[in-house]
Amino acid sequence: NAGVTQTPKFQVLKTGQSMTLQCAQDMNHNSMYWYRQDPGMGLRLIYYSASEGTTDKGEVPNGYNVSRLNKREFSLRLESAAPSQTSVYFCASRDSADTQYFGPGTRLTVL
Amino acid sequence: RKEVEQDPGPFNVPEGATVAFNCTYSNSASQSFFWYRQDCRKEPKLLMSVYSSGNEDGRFTAQLNRASQYISLLIRDSKLSDSATYLCVVTNTGFQKLVFGTGTRLLVSP
Image 1 (tube, rainbow over the protein chains, first blue to last red):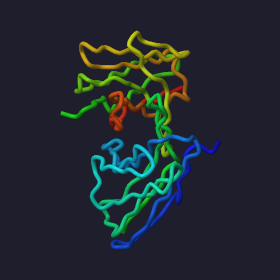
Image 2: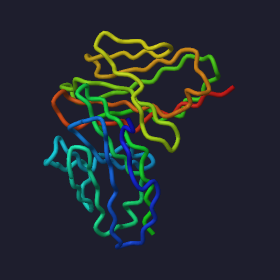
Image 3: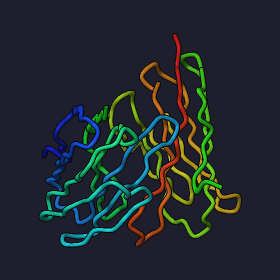
């Protein structure tokens, strides 16, 4: 089992560029999440998906869109990147005991 | 007031010391509680769940105090490898969102 995988690991964008962060899990979990982590701010929820075909906003959804492509995959899209979106992005899935399993993260810099 | 609050630290302790962290939560309806560990530049990983009666896993003991709305983590006989940030996590059963504290940083020195 690979658990939760994310691509890319690192990315540098210019302001206004777009990109999609990919996430996949092989644990057959229904729920998946996207977080961002900034120094001193902790993990903040961007979007989540309780099951295939559903998505909901979290604490900081502005500037992002998501797609739950199937049960395995949950992608995060930045349509027009801004320097304020420089962060570390974590994808996670959740099991029936409420335990979250995180991917290794994507370090994004927006210049 | 933040939903989950932790002392950011850092807590600097020598090897072999005992150290304790507290975490307070504001939602009295919270039902599930966890401690996660995050190493520098890595993803958070589950350390242990916290049960109502308290629970122990080797050198780690977690306790829940519902009346005062806090959970605690005690680490005995600290090792250098315990150096990390410890995140407190709270959720409500059936709710989809887990709330993470900002973490407490622990540095164990030789």
